[in-house]
Length: 331
Image (cartoon, rainbow, N blue to C red; front, side, top):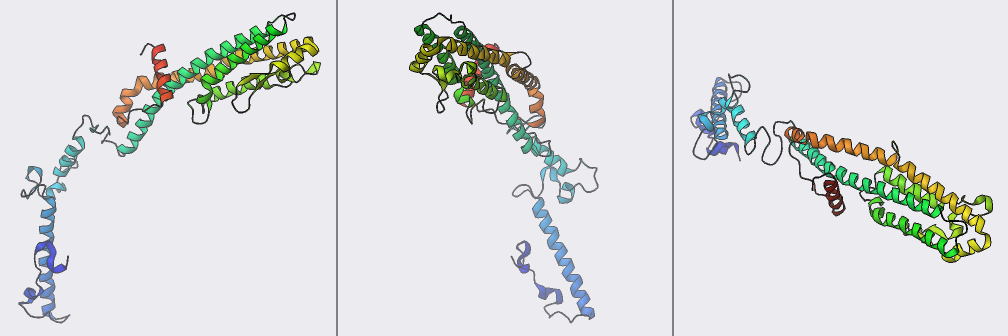
């Protein structure tokens, strides 16, 4: 838009001097020309401001008949101008107590950041309950593994090879049940991948089986010499019956001694993992506290920071959450 077409009107310089050319700079005529130019420009600016202040086609005024100066609150106390009222009305549209229909608290300096934070809290509230359910199940599985280890260690020294094989296989099956139940949750991206207590439990029990020092005084190198080992790919326990039979045949006393050393160590490790003040119970206690806090303060948090997006749990989390709700009477 050229200076000759400002506000939709022609700006005719020739009219400033009655159709004559502008006088040379420094003459008295130049002063008159300058004054006339400023006068016309002031008029154009006034028209432009009035156009900006119009709130609806054909109204020429904003709500309440206020002109642009009134909108700016000229001569009025802060917070009482027509502009303040207009902005206040816009902020409250679609919500109550400052929370807009979209779930943002428009009274905050940065409602979008607060909304994102509340979205995270909503997601964490679900994730913590799901994790609590998984850790409670893990505690029960660790207790079961301890019992299976004690059964294996209780095999009589006079037992035949077939009975020993059955006991070793029963223990391996129990261990594999534990890994199949929690293996995906413990992997990268799984629900328990970032939970130290769960990772420590997995590592401790696996290392107990892989420990090469059980039976060392009798020349054996742990349970591997008795046919029990952990597959490095599947992380499952395997039993080589031929190797177990050979160990029992070549030195049954040494083999049974190594078996008892192993089962005693494994049972003690499982007991410590589940003991008060140790990994699993500590994690469950921490989860319980944060869950109670979020549940008790959720309404006030949402009132202050906005509603946030609702949580969208994974299939694994949804299943664990259902277990948590059922065990806490919230099904």
